[in-house]
Amino acid sequence: MGWWQVNADTLAGSRFVLSPLAETFAGLKMLHSGTAAHPGERSWLDAHLAGYRRRLAADPVTAAVVRAGLGKAWNADFLTPTPTGEPEDFEAEVTRVRETSPEAARSHLAVALGGGPHALRGDPLPRILRDRDDLAARAADLLQYVWAEAVRPYWARRRRVLEADVVARTAQLSQGGWAAALDAMRPGMRWLGQNRLQVNLHEYPPREISGAELFFVPVTPQRQGWVSWEEPHRYAVVYPCSGALAGGEPVAAPESLNRLLGPARAGVLALLNSPLSTSQLVAVTGHGLGSVGRHLKILLDAGLVQRRRAGRSVLYSRTPAGEVLVKAGLRS
Image (cartoon, rainbow, N blue to C red):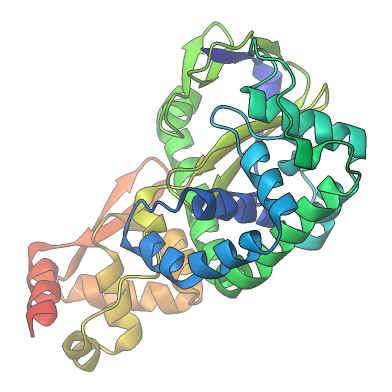
């Protein structure tokens, strides 16, 4: 298994950060695999997969870059630059991909295609990619295409989902400590004790990262995740955000419920099929804190939602009466 040696100061100073490029790369991986984790992802693929495949069919070199760079066990490092920890827009992030030297791009692709730096295979880089100096530029162009066509139109909604996930993780951290928060973050990841963080199930040598910056980066695609680093200064764990928040577009309230409660209040009730905090509801709906608070108070007074404290957070969920109301609206 792959694990990192993380001292207390590094863990205490770690941060959650959002990355438009990480979200785009996760989308690229989903387009490449053509598989979805839930109906929301299936709908997204149905809208964008054909255009993506047409683009690659018209550009065999870029298609070969994708096949090499998205290895089964290892991504080409230059495709997943580690966040700096400072606010960066997509263009600033993808520039770091574009500025990769030709030699580094070819080397990273060969490593990914071979199964990672610790695999026993030799250089497998196909002929179509050898001696080319434009591989990083082609990769950056493809990432810009995926961002413009398939991620940016949804970014406002996805950003709210990612922010809500950070709220949920922070609450989990306050309730159960780092071990609980890390164990639930992504498959194959758990706190081993003795300052050891298992980041995946691959048989890679351990890494000493004490003293470095450590970032946790959520993405919405549910089967995506990876680690990256810029030794010795920065390391990142990219993980899928919690499924309760990432199931595509917001849960649509039935029209009959909209007429009864009003669209905004009905939308809040429809979202509470799993417990959410006020901050999460603000992030997911895009409504103001005062507006969400007023809707919750009315729903509480009507006996349609209930609340309970979890650590420092107050979580809201539907009561049986609220469940009946929503299900009745769905049947009407």
